[in-house]
Amino acid sequence: MYVDRLSLTDFRSYEQLDLELSPGATVLVGPNGVGKTNLVEALGMLSTLSSHRVSSDAPLVRFGAERALVRASFVRGAQRSMLELEVAPGRANRARINRGNPVRARDLLGIARTVLFAPEDLALVKGDPSARRRFLDELLTVLLPHHAGTRADYDRVLKQRNALLKSARAARFSRRSPAPDPSGATVESTLDVWDAHLAQAGARLLHARLELVDRLVPHLDAAYAQLTDGSKVAGAVYRSSVEGSVPESDGEDFPAMDGGGDAQDGGESPAVVRDGDAAPGLAGLGVAEIAERFLAALAQARQRELERGLTLVGPHRDELELTLGDAPAKGFASHGETWSFALALRLAAYYVMIDDSAVAGDEPILILDDVFAELDAARRARLAAIVAKAEQVLVTAAVDEDVPAELAGRRVRVVPGALAPLVPGEDA
Image (cartoon, rainbow, N blue to C red; front, side, top):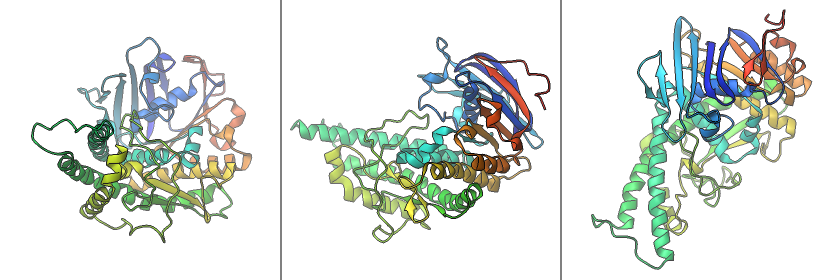
């Protein structure tokens, strides 16, 4: 797959921009702050519907404008698709496919596949569990777009259940009874209803995440070995709060699909319980069996949840524990190892997408946003050798010298708000 044209209207720093692209490597070169990342950010949004830099839509719209438009033409084997995303802060984003009638933004998922490497990826290893959950869910919805609905269903039920728990907690601390339900239902009976909904939606999401991790781990270790000397094994283990593997005092609430989640209980990455101490695992269980475990965990946690006014069990509080050798990657990996691990996660996602390809020409587009400047010479060369084989690679760099020779190709000069004329001989 490759993109042959990208058009922006009022997106970030661009009032209007048209960029023609071609297969192979294209390097967007320009000083920091001129808008190189804005271009690849827009392209990534057509794949995942989210930015790798911000969690809300407002910064994506040029100051003074009401909305932004991102359009791109993708070639996938013999098929061509024109995708358009309208970003309108405060309103639901809309999309068009092949210039048709407006559709939901999430109808774009699965059509354009990109894998974006960026300095922000260090948070996948060093950051809170929410970064790793987001990584899994974004990959999941690109591979299986219907899981965008699964995640949205879970988010909706979670917010409703948290609202009920907060109301009950507030009533307790004010020494008054909760407002009576017109139907005569009690807080406990209403929670029973929401528990059932949460367990069903959560079980579907958990089941999908567990299957994805199983597919991801072999590629993760292989990718890490490609980027390093292969002396350490890179691994990942999914730790679920439904199993009791994640302390209830840590974690963050579930972010909404548009990135604007309502984080009510932030915290650092939780200390996980090791296999020998954990409850029986969920691996290999079906959705119905996971839902039963989920309901049992909710029942056990109910009193504590009423005291906290917060849902303490579910996918919104789970952790993807990353390991390097015998130790957790977070806190134990060196800076170079952390970079290699973050890159290996993205490469593993790339390889999973290739495994999932159903038609010729379905290979994802690789995007490297200011990554080479952060790497030493050996890691630069290894990463360049890997990605140079892709059908299309887009690279941003402050100076030409940051880009390894393996990615020599077309150069596009970026200046504030525009593209500069190409220097003769640069468009290879």
